[in-house]
Length: 123
Length: 403
Image (cartoon, chains in turn red, orange):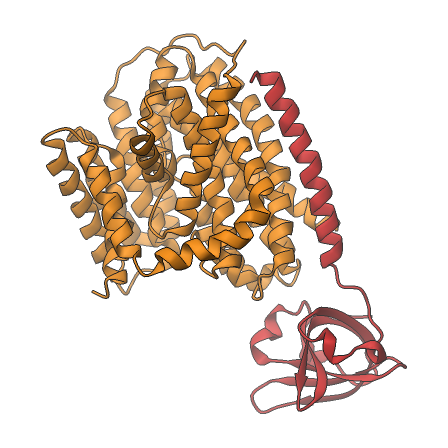
């Protein structure tokens, strides 16, 4: 193997790697889903929902509970106090009627679907 | 999407820095990123941050042979390349030595990706098979390492192993030390500064370096890549084993004498170990490197899609790594004769001392001094430097033995 051949192989690797990176990065970016379309089969999947906040409550321990509605349905968003600093915004400033997008894993609590946001954007 | 590409490129830049500066390990960078991850995660997604760490880690494994070969300043994984590397440098063939490690690095990345479907099924079984015997496997490795020494060297090797092990055992129990920064002064002292201090005493004249018409036979490359791949798998699965030990063991097992093959294998082991530590994180839920620990903590549910994303990131940056390392090596080959070697080495030692104080404080500086003394034992006693890996192996053995 000569230097020229090594360079050719390296360039080919970089191109294939970039295509793979591009493909898997796109697959990883959450697509906005209608709340009404979510089912228990989606539990554990990273999901992004957008809608209006219809209720905000904060527990004694600092956990925040949001109700998000988008016209197709309603879902609870549970923000644990441990994740407050990593959401991208201060969630204590979220109020009713705010339009937000929440990205996180879908979970089930007492037979109801809920989202555990990892990221929140105020629209 | 752009976020991922930009962070991969930022990782490449960081990897160039950590690779070229002796003593800075990508694990240090990964753990540093982990400590500021709450802030970074407000700006970037966890997967994108993991892409950054892997890009830096993989690029590092290509570039870290440059200081090892040109300056004689290695870290644990490249320590064994110093002797053949320095020999190549004194023969005006340093560029060829680097070229050989790159053939190994890119070769094992391609092989890992091609064999991934097979590894996906076999690796958990292999790990399950040896899990209960890890302490004994490690003991066997130490024994083989010691037996590779000649006559009295066996006793001297064992002495170095136990001295380094004692250092590791005492230090890892010290409550005032942060485990994230603990390893930096230890490895810098054991493998970095101790080697540079010795290289200061050498008065070799560096000849003009040849950078043209470099080549290696395809068959030699292929055999060495296969050896590097399996040795790297070993490093990725077993705790406490470094690339250098794996290279020595492979040499013993295959009775390899060819220095070119040895450099190709070592280049491969170094890179594939980083990749296997990620596979181990996904397949057996055991992070086997600082990089894998950081990735595992940043991405809580590390899944198959994350693994594939990071493997393609590795492939992308590995290609860049080869091109960059060849270019940078050519520059080094041109300037190495003109540089005041003594001044450069002293500057690097000063830099590492300052970095130790910044990262680990006065305790770190004390550890750096002790580790440097322990690191000098092996070369002064004429035994392999890899016995100093006892610093990790002995505490791990005792842990698995329940002591």
